[in-house]
Image 1: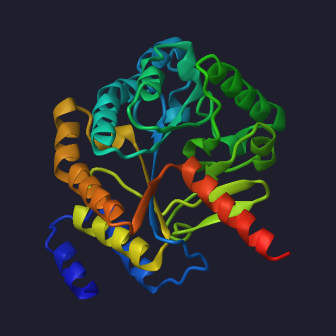
Image 2 (image 1 turned 60 degrees about the horizontal axis):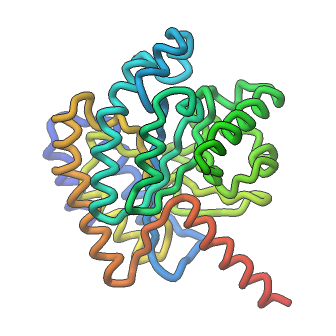
Length: 302
C-alpha cells in the first residue's frame, strides 16, 4: 500500500511542500501509535479567517499587513476571502458538513455579512476566534493579550456570539490561562511535521484539538481519503485546517478546487458518516464530546 502511494506521488513532475508533507504524514500516521481511541473515527475541519473583507485593509491603512501575511496586503487577503467564503460555505451547507470558522475579531468593525451568513446557515457551524487584530500572541504582553480577548468578546457579543474555540494567529500559542478566563473551551495548537498528530488532549480546563494536517491547493484527494481511513480504522480524530486564500485567488480557480478536490473528499466523508464509522465535528463539538467521555471516566473511577 505504501509503495503504491509513493509511486503515485513519483508521477508528479514537480514536488510541492504540500505534497511532500502529505507523503510524510501518511507514513508517520501508519507507523505512529496513539494513546487515544474513540468510538469511531472523527473528522474536524477548521478554517482561519485572517481578514474577512478588504475593508479592513482600508481601515488599517496597510499598517497591519505584516501581521496578516508576509507577501500579500491585508486588503488583498480580505478581497480573496470575500470571494472564497460564500463558495466554501455553500459547499459545506450543501454537504451538511459543520466546520469551525476561526474569525478575526476586527471584522465586527466593518462588513459583517460573513458573520451573518454563518449565523443564518442551515448547518450549525462553530464560530471561533482568530485574534482581534491578527497579532502573534507570543509577541504580546499580558495586558495586550487581555485587550485582544476583551475586544473579541465585546464585538462578538453584539451578534449573539460567544466564541468557545480559539485559533492563534500565525499559530503562536500563548496565554492559555487567559483563554480559560474568557470562557474558551478549546484551541488549536501549533502544528508541523513533528507536532501534527491525531489527538485531542486536555490542558487545564481547555482541550487542545491538535492539528493533523495543513492543506492547500496542492492537496491530493487520494491521500486525504487514506488519512480519513486511518482515522476510521484506529478511531482517532483527523483535524485538517487551511486559509480561505490557499485555494486560488480568483473565483474560477477556487471553484475548480472545490469541484475537483473538496467535493469528492466531503462526499467520501459523508458516506463514512452514514455508515456510522465516522463523526464529523467542529472544534467545539469535538471538545464537548471528549469532555463527556472524561466525565464518564472520572465518575466510573469512584
